[in-house]
Amino acid sequence: MTDAKASPAPRMTKQRAAILDVLDGTDEFRSAQAWHDLLRHDGSSVGLATVYRSLQALAETGEVDAIVTSSGETLYRRCGAVNEHHHHLRCRVCGTADDIEVPEFEEWAARIASERGFARMDHTVEITGVCADCTAKGH
Amino acid sequence: MTDAKASPAPRMTKQRAAILDVLDGTDEFRSAQAWHDLLRHDGSSVGLATVYRSLQALAETGEVDAIVTSSGETLYRRCGAVNEHHHHLRCRVCGTADDIEVPEFEEWAARIASERGFARMDHTVEITGVCADCTAKGH
DNA sequence: TCACTTTTGACAATGATTATCACTGAGAAT
DNA sequence: ATTCTCAGTGATAATCATTGTCAAAAGTGA
Ligand SMILES: [Mn+2]
Ligand SMILES: [Mn+2]
Ligand SMILES: [Zn+2]
Ligand SMILES: [Zn+2]
Image 1 (tube, rainbow over the protein chains, first blue to last red):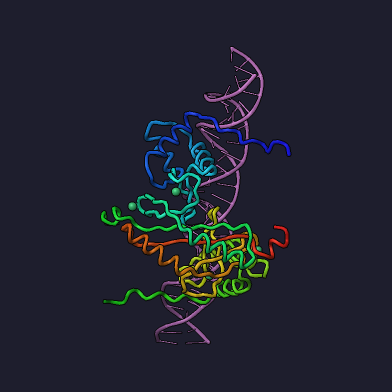
Image 2: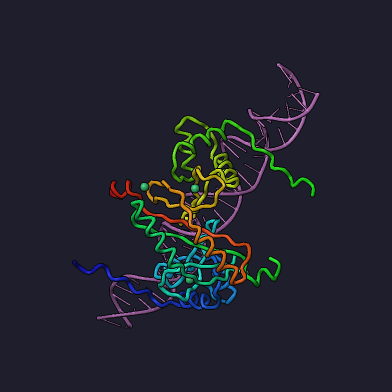
């Protein structure tokens, strides 16, 4: 076959750098708008649309994790376990999250699905709660 | 203690009846707007806002299941397993879904959470794919 | 430096959901 | 059956996160 349209290697702009930088600042899940606010407060003048675009791009390459809250808002955070399939135990108050793995579940899901003739499987497993810190603070 | 504010027993309006009726028609997950369309096609003149309100109310009492898609849209369907905590194996094409239970997972989630000091836990487990029928139809 | 693209950002547009608010009818009481 | 009252309804406006537009700005390789 002919070249499968090689991925256009993203350019390193100052906006992208600023975004990656602020992402590294915390291990909390935040919305695109929240990250944008942080950037502005840090003196950066990155546009909101750019923040949305960058976070989405980063999410696709697996450099950041994205989750959808029950209200439909998408949250992002830079993730340590790059490229590895995993899930999260997240605090609904502060957004802090731990990476977790559930190999038994993955197997179970795959088996159940194939038993029923399903194909192209996908799944979502998000566990939330209020972390020890936030609980102590009365939340 | 004094009366814990008894729930005001919902009234049986023709709109509510129509909605429950159309919900019973299929076992597929549909959006509020999709259900509204179905109702209109069936000759009912229920308002869109009423469909939203009713579905939400029914979801709170557990009479219907609600899930949030990855695009943030909320889907509903009348559920057989009333009041029982469970999850779904859903077809992304036609919306059909089976109820599934994963007791081991529930236990595991609770344990992991308490180990890390989390409280007020909650979780989401949604498994999707393309069902046998839809696969056969080339989807 | 130059030409070629990608990326940006201000702002408009989308689209699902929610809020309004005057009006209607379910059902309890008489 | 008639009243009374407020939950329920619906047409429509308002929200609000996200996406689209497009001219201007800035990477990058030659
Ligand atoms: Mn992660
Ligand atoms: Mn169900
Ligand atoms: Zn917390
Ligand atoms: Zn299907």
